[in-house]
Image 1 (tube, each protein chain N blue to C red):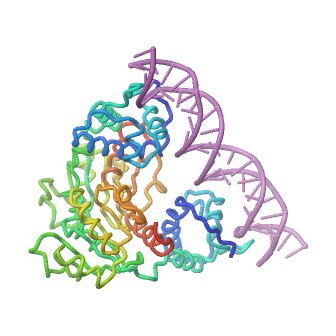
Image 2: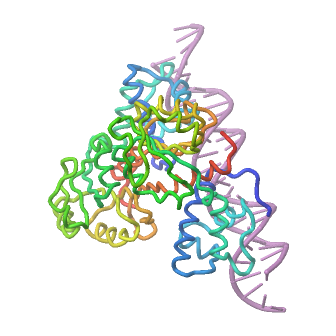
Length: 213
Length: 213
DNA sequence: TAGATTGTTAATCGATTAACAATC
DNA sequence: TAGATTGTTAATCGATTAACAATC
Protein backbone atom coordinates (compact mmCIF):
# COMPACT_ATOMS: atom_id res chain seq x y z
CA UNK A 1 0.00 0.00 0.00
CA UNK A 2 1.71 3.16 -1.16
CA UNK A 3 -0.93 5.25 0.71
CA UNK A 4 -0.05 8.88 1.26
CA UNK A 5 0.28 10.48 4.65
CA UNK A 6 -1.34 13.82 3.87
CA UNK A 7 -4.66 13.76 2.09
CA UNK A 8 -6.24 16.99 0.93
CA UNK A 9 -9.75 18.02 1.77
CA UNK A 10 -10.68 18.04 -1.91
CA UNK A 11 -9.96 14.33 -2.07
CA UNK A 12 -11.78 13.54 1.18
CA UNK A 13 -14.89 15.36 0.02
CA UNK A 14 -15.05 13.20 -3.08
CA UNK A 15 -15.00 9.91 -1.18
CA UNK A 16 -18.70 9.90 -0.26
CA UNK A 17 -19.54 10.50 -3.90
CA UNK A 18 -17.42 7.57 -5.07
CA UNK A 19 -19.03 5.48 -2.38
CA UNK A 20 -22.47 6.47 -3.64
CA UNK A 21 -21.70 5.78 -7.29
CA UNK A 22 -20.19 2.44 -6.48
CA UNK A 23 -23.41 1.49 -4.67
CA UNK A 24 -25.31 2.36 -7.85
CA UNK A 25 -23.00 0.14 -9.86
CA UNK A 26 -23.51 -2.69 -7.41
CA UNK A 27 -27.28 -2.31 -7.74
CA UNK A 28 -26.91 -2.54 -11.51
CA UNK A 29 -24.92 -5.70 -11.09
CA UNK A 30 -21.73 -4.24 -12.57
CA UNK A 31 -18.78 -6.09 -11.11
CA UNK A 32 -15.87 -4.32 -12.81
CA UNK A 33 -15.22 -0.70 -13.71
CA UNK A 34 -12.28 1.15 -15.24
CA UNK A 35 -11.31 4.66 -14.21
CA UNK A 36 -12.25 5.74 -17.74
CA UNK A 37 -15.77 4.38 -17.55
CA UNK A 38 -16.31 5.70 -14.03
CA UNK A 39 -15.02 9.12 -15.09
CA UNK A 40 -17.67 9.30 -17.82
CA UNK A 41 -20.38 8.45 -15.33
CA UNK A 42 -19.28 10.87 -12.66
CA UNK A 43 -18.09 13.62 -14.98
CA UNK A 44 -14.60 13.60 -13.55
CA UNK A 45 -11.31 12.82 -15.29
CA UNK A 46 -9.94 9.28 -15.15
CA UNK A 47 -6.70 10.82 -13.90
CA UNK A 48 -8.41 12.36 -10.94
CA UNK A 49 -10.10 9.12 -9.97
CA UNK A 50 -6.83 7.22 -10.08
CA UNK A 51 -5.04 9.97 -8.16
CA UNK A 52 -7.76 10.03 -5.53
CA UNK A 53 -7.84 6.30 -5.00
CA UNK A 54 -4.09 6.03 -4.92
CA UNK A 55 -3.99 8.32 -1.92
CA UNK A 56 -5.19 5.30 -0.01
CA UNK A 57 -3.62 2.45 -1.91
CA UNK A 58 -3.66 0.54 -5.17
CA UNK A 59 -7.11 -0.94 -5.35
CA UNK A 60 -7.07 -1.62 -9.06
CA UNK A 61 -5.45 -4.09 -11.36
CA UNK A 62 -3.57 -3.08 -14.47
CA UNK A 63 -5.25 -4.05 -17.67
CA UNK A 64 -8.49 -4.83 -15.83
CA UNK A 65 -9.74 -1.91 -13.78
CA UNK A 66 -11.38 -1.97 -10.37
CA UNK A 67 -13.57 -4.58 -8.80
CA UNK A 68 -16.73 -2.71 -7.79
CA UNK A 69 -17.43 -4.70 -4.62
CA UNK A 70 -13.86 -4.56 -3.42
CA UNK A 71 -13.49 -0.85 -4.15
CA UNK A 72 -16.73 0.02 -2.39
CA UNK A 73 -15.77 -2.03 0.63
CA UNK A 74 -12.35 -0.37 0.71
CA UNK A 75 -13.80 3.14 0.55
CA UNK A 76 -16.34 2.20 3.19
CA UNK A 77 -13.49 1.03 5.40
CA UNK A 78 -11.53 4.23 4.75
CA UNK A 79 -14.51 6.36 5.78
CA UNK A 80 -15.25 4.01 8.62
CA UNK A 81 -18.93 3.41 7.94
CA UNK A 82 -18.96 0.16 9.85
CA UNK A 83 -17.96 1.78 13.08
CA UNK A 84 -21.28 3.46 13.88
CA UNK A 85 -20.16 6.55 15.75
CA UNK A 86 -22.68 7.48 18.43
CA UNK A 87 -24.44 10.74 17.58
CA UNK A 88 -26.94 13.03 19.25
CA UNK A 89 -29.27 15.53 17.66
CA UNK A 90 -29.95 18.89 19.25
CA UNK A 91 -33.17 20.72 18.45
CA UNK A 92 -36.31 18.72 17.75
CA UNK A 93 -38.01 21.36 15.61
CA UNK A 94 -39.13 20.83 12.04
CA UNK A 95 -35.63 20.44 10.75
CA UNK A 96 -34.48 18.19 13.58
CA UNK A 97 -37.48 15.94 13.13
CA UNK A 98 -36.96 15.80 9.37
CA UNK A 99 -33.30 14.87 9.79
CA UNK A 100 -34.24 12.17 12.29
CA UNK A 101 -36.69 10.58 9.88
CA UNK A 102 -34.71 11.37 6.75
CA UNK A 103 -31.31 9.92 7.57
CA UNK A 104 -30.58 6.25 7.50
CA UNK A 105 -27.95 6.77 10.17
CA UNK A 106 -26.32 3.33 10.10
CA UNK A 107 -25.86 3.76 6.35
CA UNK A 108 -23.79 6.84 7.10
CA UNK A 109 -21.63 5.35 9.81
CA UNK A 110 -23.61 6.70 12.76
CA UNK A 111 -26.04 5.66 15.40
CA UNK A 112 -28.48 8.24 16.69
CA UNK A 113 -28.53 7.67 20.43
CA UNK A 114 -30.51 10.64 21.66
CA UNK A 115 -32.37 13.84 20.84
CA UNK A 116 -32.38 16.99 22.96
CA UNK A 117 -34.65 20.02 22.98
CA UNK A 118 -35.24 23.03 25.22
CA UNK A 119 -39.00 22.54 25.17
CA UNK A 120 -39.83 20.76 28.48
CA UNK A 121 -43.00 19.36 26.93
CA UNK A 122 -40.98 17.14 24.62
CA UNK A 123 -39.00 15.57 27.46
CA UNK A 124 -39.71 11.87 27.54
CA UNK A 125 -41.32 11.72 24.10
CA UNK A 126 -39.91 9.86 21.11
CA UNK A 127 -39.18 10.68 17.47
CA UNK A 128 -38.73 7.77 15.12
CA UNK A 129 -38.06 5.57 18.11
CA UNK A 130 -35.37 7.82 19.58
CA UNK A 131 -35.93 9.33 23.04
CA UNK A 132 -36.18 13.09 23.33
CA UNK A 133 -34.71 14.60 26.48
CA UNK A 134 -34.62 18.08 27.89
CA UNK A 135 -31.48 20.15 27.37
CA UNK A 136 -30.91 20.19 31.13
CA UNK A 137 -29.99 16.52 30.85
CA UNK A 138 -27.42 17.03 28.10
CA UNK A 139 -24.23 17.18 30.16
CA UNK A 140 -25.12 14.14 32.25
CA UNK A 141 -26.07 12.19 29.14
CA UNK A 142 -22.78 13.03 27.41
CA UNK A 143 -20.72 12.08 30.43
CA UNK A 144 -22.43 8.73 30.54
CA UNK A 145 -22.87 7.89 26.86
CA UNK A 146 -19.93 9.69 25.25
CA UNK A 147 -21.55 10.68 21.95
CA UNK A 148 -18.92 11.62 19.35
CA UNK A 149 -21.07 13.61 16.96
CA UNK A 150 -23.65 16.33 17.59
CA UNK A 151 -26.10 17.29 14.89
CA UNK A 152 -27.12 20.88 15.46
CA UNK A 153 -30.63 21.76 14.35
CA UNK A 154 -30.93 24.84 16.50
CA UNK A 155 -31.17 28.55 15.72
CA UNK A 156 -28.01 30.57 15.41
CA UNK A 157 -28.70 32.49 18.62
CA UNK A 158 -28.66 29.44 20.86
CA UNK A 159 -25.71 27.80 19.13
CA UNK A 160 -22.81 29.40 21.07
CA UNK A 161 -24.08 28.24 24.48
CA UNK A 162 -25.01 24.78 23.22
CA UNK A 163 -21.62 24.30 21.55
CA UNK A 164 -19.88 25.43 24.72
CA UNK A 165 -21.75 22.79 26.71
CA UNK A 166 -21.12 20.09 24.13
CA UNK A 167 -17.42 20.81 23.76
CA UNK A 168 -17.02 20.82 27.53
CA UNK A 169 -18.81 17.50 27.61
CA UNK A 170 -16.29 16.07 25.18
CA UNK A 171 -18.12 16.24 21.85
CA UNK A 172 -15.55 16.91 19.13
CA UNK A 173 -17.54 16.63 15.91
CA UNK A 174 -20.50 18.62 14.63
CA UNK A 175 -22.88 18.38 11.75
CA UNK A 176 -24.00 21.96 11.85
CA UNK A 177 -27.26 23.15 10.33
CA UNK A 178 -27.26 26.38 12.31
CA UNK A 179 -25.81 29.53 10.79
CA UNK A 180 -23.29 29.80 13.56
CA UNK A 181 -19.66 29.30 12.48
CA UNK A 182 -18.44 26.80 15.08
CA UNK A 183 -14.87 26.46 13.83
CA UNK A 184 -14.38 30.19 14.31
CA UNK A 185 -15.01 29.89 18.01
CA UNK A 186 -13.63 26.51 18.99
CA UNK A 187 -10.30 24.91 18.24
CA UNK A 188 -9.59 21.26 17.68
CA UNK A 189 -13.14 20.65 16.55
CA UNK A 190 -14.34 18.78 13.48
CA UNK A 191 -17.26 20.56 11.87
CA UNK A 192 -19.26 19.97 8.75
CA UNK A 193 -21.42 22.97 8.03
CA UNK A 194 -24.59 22.60 6.03
CA UNK A 195 -25.48 26.21 5.34
CA UNK A 196 -28.64 25.76 3.34
CA UNK A 197 -29.15 29.52 3.23
CA UNK A 198 -25.77 29.94 1.55
CA UNK A 199 -26.69 27.24 -0.94
CA UNK A 200 -29.93 28.98 -1.79
CA UNK A 201 -28.17 32.33 -2.17
CA UNK A 202 -25.56 30.78 -4.45
CA UNK A 203 -28.37 29.37 -6.54
CA UNK A 204 -30.13 32.73 -6.62
CA UNK A 205 -26.88 34.40 -7.67
CA UNK A 206 -26.55 31.97 -10.56
CA UNK A 207 -30.17 32.41 -11.56
CA UNK A 208 -29.76 36.16 -11.64
CA UNK A 209 -26.30 36.36 -13.16
CA UNK A 210 -25.71 33.39 -15.34
CA UNK A 211 -27.51 33.24 -18.63
CA UNK A 212 -28.26 29.52 -18.94
CA UNK A 213 -25.64 26.77 -18.36
CA UNK B 1 -15.89 49.79 -11.84
CA UNK B 2 -13.02 47.55 -12.86
CA UNK B 3 -15.31 44.48 -12.45
CA UNK B 4 -14.04 41.29 -14.03
CA UNK B 5 -15.88 39.37 -16.69
CA UNK B 6 -15.14 35.86 -15.52
CA UNK B 7 -15.73 35.09 -11.87
CA UNK B 8 -14.71 31.74 -10.45
CA UNK B 9 -17.02 29.51 -8.51
CA UNK B 10 -14.79 29.76 -5.46
CA UNK B 11 -15.45 33.48 -5.31
CA UNK B 12 -19.20 33.12 -5.90
CA UNK B 13 -19.51 30.59 -3.09
CA UNK B 14 -17.98 33.04 -0.65
CA UNK B 15 -20.45 35.84 -1.40
CA UNK B 16 -23.27 34.49 0.79
CA UNK B 17 -20.83 34.22 3.66
CA UNK B 18 -19.67 37.83 3.29
CA UNK B 19 -23.30 38.84 3.09
CA UNK B 20 -24.00 37.00 6.33
CA UNK B 21 -21.02 38.44 8.19
CA UNK B 22 -21.85 41.95 7.07
CA UNK B 23 -25.37 41.50 8.47
CA UNK B 24 -23.78 40.56 11.80
CA UNK B 25 -21.66 43.70 11.71
CA UNK B 26 -24.72 45.80 10.96
CA UNK B 27 -26.51 44.26 13.94
CA UNK B 28 -23.53 45.18 16.13
CA UNK B 29 -23.73 48.74 14.87
CA UNK B 30 -20.32 48.61 13.18
CA UNK B 31 -20.32 51.07 10.30
CA UNK B 32 -16.82 50.62 8.94
CA UNK B 33 -14.56 47.59 8.47
CA UNK B 34 -11.13 47.05 6.94
CA UNK B 35 -10.21 43.93 5.00
CA UNK B 36 -7.74 43.16 7.80
CA UNK B 37 -10.35 43.26 10.53
CA UNK B 38 -12.88 41.29 8.47
CA UNK B 39 -10.24 38.69 7.66
CA UNK B 40 -9.64 38.09 11.36
CA UNK B 41 -13.38 37.63 11.95
CA UNK B 42 -13.95 35.32 9.03
CA UNK B 43 -10.62 33.50 9.20
CA UNK B 44 -9.71 34.43 5.66
CA UNK B 45 -6.76 36.48 4.42
CA UNK B 46 -7.22 40.20 3.85
CA UNK B 47 -5.82 39.64 0.37
CA UNK B 48 -8.52 37.19 -0.48
CA UNK B 49 -11.26 39.51 0.68
CA UNK B 50 -9.94 42.37 -1.41
CA UNK B 51 -9.45 40.10 -4.43
CA UNK B 52 -12.97 38.74 -4.08
CA UNK B 53 -14.62 42.14 -3.77
CA UNK B 54 -12.61 43.58 -6.61
CA UNK B 55 -14.07 41.00 -8.95
CA UNK B 56 -17.17 43.16 -8.79
CA UNK B 57 -15.77 46.63 -8.32
CA UNK B 58 -13.96 48.91 -5.92
CA UNK B 59 -16.26 49.16 -2.95
CA UNK B 60 -13.67 50.39 -0.49
CA UNK B 61 -11.81 53.59 0.16
CA UNK B 62 -8.05 53.70 0.57
CA UNK B 63 -6.93 54.54 4.06
CA UNK B 64 -10.43 53.95 5.41
CA UNK B 65 -11.75 50.52 4.59
CA UNK B 66 -15.28 49.50 3.64
CA UNK B 67 -18.58 51.00 4.68
CA UNK B 68 -20.54 48.08 6.11
CA UNK B 69 -23.97 49.22 4.92
CA UNK B 70 -22.77 50.06 1.43
CA UNK B 71 -20.82 46.83 1.05
CA UNK B 72 -23.73 44.69 2.23
CA UNK B 73 -26.10 46.46 -0.12
CA UNK B 74 -23.67 46.01 -3.01
CA UNK B 75 -23.25 42.28 -2.35
CA UNK B 76 -27.01 41.93 -1.99
CA UNK B 77 -27.40 43.61 -5.37
CA UNK B 78 -24.75 41.35 -6.94
CA UNK B 79 -26.55 38.24 -5.68
CA UNK B 80 -29.87 39.77 -6.58
CA UNK B 81 -31.66 39.22 -3.26
CA UNK B 82 -34.19 41.95 -3.96
CA UNK B 83 -35.53 40.26 -7.03
CA UNK B 84 -37.48 37.47 -5.32
CA UNK B 85 -37.23 34.67 -7.84
CA UNK B 86 -40.40 32.56 -7.81
CA UNK B 87 -39.72 29.09 -6.43
CA UNK B 88 -41.67 25.89 -5.98
CA UNK B 89 -41.00 23.03 -3.61
CA UNK B 90 -41.49 19.42 -4.63
CA UNK B 91 -42.15 16.82 -1.97
CA UNK B 92 -44.06 17.77 1.16
CA UNK B 93 -42.58 15.09 3.38
CA UNK B 94 -40.69 15.77 6.59
CA UNK B 95 -37.84 17.47 4.85
CA UNK B 96 -40.05 19.50 2.52
CA UNK B 97 -42.14 20.71 5.42
CA UNK B 98 -39.08 21.58 7.46
CA UNK B 99 -37.59 23.56 4.57
CA UNK B 100 -40.87 25.40 4.10
CA UNK B 101 -40.98 26.47 7.73
CA UNK B 102 -37.24 26.86 8.11
CA UNK B 103 -36.37 29.17 5.25
CA UNK B 104 -37.11 32.85 5.33
CA UNK B 105 -37.43 32.80 1.55
CA UNK B 106 -37.56 36.56 0.91
CA UNK B 107 -34.34 36.90 2.90
CA UNK B 108 -32.72 34.56 0.39
CA UNK B 109 -34.00 36.24 -2.75
CA UNK B 110 -36.92 33.88 -3.35
CA UNK B 111 -40.63 33.65 -3.05
CA UNK B 112 -42.16 30.26 -2.44
CA UNK B 113 -45.20 30.20 -4.72
CA UNK B 114 -46.30 26.59 -4.47
CA UNK B 115 -45.71 23.13 -3.04
CA UNK B 116 -46.29 19.86 -4.89
CA UNK B 117 -46.65 16.30 -3.65
CA UNK B 118 -47.69 12.95 -5.11
CA UNK B 119 -49.98 12.19 -2.16
CA UNK B 120 -53.51 13.08 -3.36
CA UNK B 121 -54.61 13.59 0.24
CA UNK B 122 -52.42 16.67 0.52
CA UNK B 123 -53.94 18.34 -2.54
CA UNK B 124 -55.62 21.55 -1.48
CA UNK B 125 -53.99 21.70 1.96
CA UNK B 126 -51.52 24.36 3.10
CA UNK B 127 -48.10 24.39 4.73
CA UNK B 128 -47.00 27.62 6.36
CA UNK B 129 -49.60 29.42 4.29
CA UNK B 130 -48.44 27.97 0.97
CA UNK B 131 -50.86 25.84 -1.06
CA UNK B 132 -50.01 22.21 -1.65
CA UNK B 133 -51.07 20.79 -5.00
CA UNK B 134 -50.95 17.35 -6.50
CA UNK B 135 -48.09 16.52 -8.86
CA UNK B 136 -50.57 16.09 -11.70
CA UNK B 137 -51.03 19.87 -11.66
CA UNK B 138 -47.33 20.64 -11.91
CA UNK B 139 -46.99 21.22 -15.64
CA UNK B 140 -50.05 23.44 -15.85
CA UNK B 141 -48.88 25.43 -12.84
CA UNK B 142 -45.41 25.98 -14.34
CA UNK B 143 -46.82 27.07 -17.69
CA UNK B 144 -48.97 29.63 -15.94
CA UNK B 145 -46.71 30.82 -13.12
CA UNK B 146 -43.23 30.34 -14.57
CA UNK B 147 -41.35 29.39 -11.41
CA UNK B 148 -37.59 29.77 -11.86
CA UNK B 149 -36.39 27.60 -9.02
CA UNK B 150 -37.45 24.12 -7.92
CA UNK B 151 -36.53 22.85 -4.48
CA UNK B 152 -36.36 19.08 -4.64
CA UNK B 153 -37.26 17.29 -1.42
CA UNK B 154 -38.06 13.98 -3.04
CA UNK B 155 -36.41 10.56 -2.94
CA UNK B 156 -33.71 9.74 -5.44
CA UNK B 157 -35.90 7.23 -7.27
CA UNK B 158 -38.55 9.75 -8.26
CA UNK B 159 -36.07 12.51 -9.11
CA UNK B 160 -35.37 11.65 -12.80
CA UNK B 161 -39.03 11.80 -13.84
CA UNK B 162 -39.74 14.92 -11.80
CA UNK B 163 -36.68 16.72 -13.20
CA UNK B 164 -37.71 15.74 -16.71
CA UNK B 165 -41.13 17.31 -16.18
CA UNK B 166 -39.70 20.42 -14.59
CA UNK B 167 -37.06 21.00 -17.24
CA UNK B 168 -39.67 20.54 -19.96
CA UNK B 169 -41.85 23.05 -18.14
CA UNK B 170 -39.04 25.57 -18.27
CA UNK B 171 -37.53 25.34 -14.78
CA UNK B 172 -33.79 25.97 -15.07
CA UNK B 173 -32.59 26.08 -11.47
CA UNK B 174 -32.68 23.46 -8.75
CA UNK B 175 -31.96 23.35 -5.06
CA UNK B 176 -31.50 19.64 -4.86
CA UNK B 177 -31.85 17.71 -1.60
CA UNK B 178 -32.29 14.40 -3.37
CA UNK B 179 -29.30 12.16 -3.98
CA UNK B 180 -29.86 12.29 -7.70
CA UNK B 181 -27.12 14.10 -9.64
CA UNK B 182 -29.18 16.43 -11.84
CA UNK B 183 -26.31 18.11 -13.67
CA UNK B 184 -25.18 14.69 -14.92
CA UNK B 185 -28.43 14.19 -16.77
CA UNK B 186 -29.46 17.66 -17.91
CA UNK B 187 -27.52 20.35 -19.70
CA UNK B 188 -27.87 24.08 -19.32
CA UNK B 189 -29.24 23.65 -15.84
CA UNK B 190 -28.23 25.48 -12.66
CA UNK B 191 -28.11 23.12 -9.72
CA UNK B 192 -27.10 23.51 -6.12
CA UNK B 193 -26.82 20.12 -4.50
CA UNK B 194 -27.27 19.75 -0.77
CA UNK B 195 -26.09 16.21 -0.23
CA UNK B 196 -26.54 15.90 3.51
CA UNK B 197 -25.53 12.27 3.37
CA UNK B 198 -22.19 13.21 1.84
CA UNK B 199 -21.71 15.82 4.56
CA UNK B 200 -22.36 13.28 7.27
CA UNK B 201 -19.99 10.78 5.67
CA UNK B 202 -17.28 13.44 5.40
CA UNK B 203 -17.78 14.17 9.08
CA UNK B 204 -17.63 10.47 9.93
CA UNK B 205 -14.44 10.13 7.90
CA UNK B 206 -12.85 12.95 9.88
CA UNK B 207 -14.05 11.52 13.18
CA UNK B 208 -12.53 8.16 12.33
CA UNK B 209 -9.35 9.33 10.67
CA UNK B 210 -8.33 12.64 12.09
CA UNK B 211 -6.94 12.69 15.59
CA UNK B 212 -8.37 15.95 16.94
CA UNK B 213 -8.17 19.29 15.08
C1' DT C 1 1.99 -12.37 -26.25
C1' DA C 2 -0.80 -8.11 -27.23
C1' DG C 3 -4.10 -5.05 -25.30
C1' DA C 4 -5.81 -2.63 -21.66
C1' DT C 5 -5.57 -0.07 -17.80
C1' DT C 6 -3.40 0.98 -13.65
C1' DG C 7 -0.05 3.64 -10.55
C1' DT C 8 2.85 7.46 -10.57
C1' DT C 9 5.67 11.16 -12.15
C1' DA C 10 5.71 15.51 -14.66
C1' DA C 11 3.24 19.59 -16.70
C1' DT C 12 -0.50 22.67 -16.45
C1' DC C 13 -3.78 25.29 -14.62
C1' DG C 14 -6.22 28.01 -11.27
C1' DA C 15 -6.72 29.87 -6.82
C1' DT C 16 -4.60 31.91 -2.88
C1' DT C 17 -1.23 34.81 -0.82
C1' DA C 18 2.20 38.40 -0.78
C1' DA C 19 3.82 42.79 -2.09
C1' DC C 20 3.45 47.41 -3.15
C1' DA C 21 2.20 51.51 -5.58
C1' DA C 22 -1.96 54.42 -5.65
C1' DT C 23 -4.75 57.30 -2.93
C1' DC C 24 -7.98 58.71 0.51
C1' DT D 1 1.09 65.95 5.46
C1' DA D 2 1.57 61.18 7.51
C1' DG D 3 -0.83 56.96 8.25
C1' DA D 4 -3.80 53.63 6.81
C1' DT D 5 -5.73 50.74 3.74
C1' DT D 6 -7.28 49.86 -0.72
C1' DG D 7 -6.84 47.97 -5.63
C1' DT D 8 -3.93 45.37 -8.43
C1' DT D 9 0.06 43.06 -10.13
C1' DA D 10 3.36 39.42 -9.24
C1' DA D 11 4.79 35.13 -6.69
C1' DT D 12 3.46 30.99 -4.56
C1' DC D 13 1.03 27.21 -3.66
C1' DG D 14 -1.97 23.34 -4.40
C1' DA D 15 -5.01 20.77 -7.17
C1' DT D 16 -6.07 18.92 -11.59
C1' DT D 17 -4.75 16.98 -15.88
C1' DA D 18 -1.66 14.73 -19.04
C1' DA D 19 1.70 11.37 -20.09
C1' DC D 20 3.79 7.12 -19.82
C1' DA D 21 6.24 3.28 -17.92
C1' DA D 22 4.86 -0.76 -15.19
C1' DT D 23 2.15 -4.77 -15.26
C1' DC D 24 -1.83 -7.68 -15.22
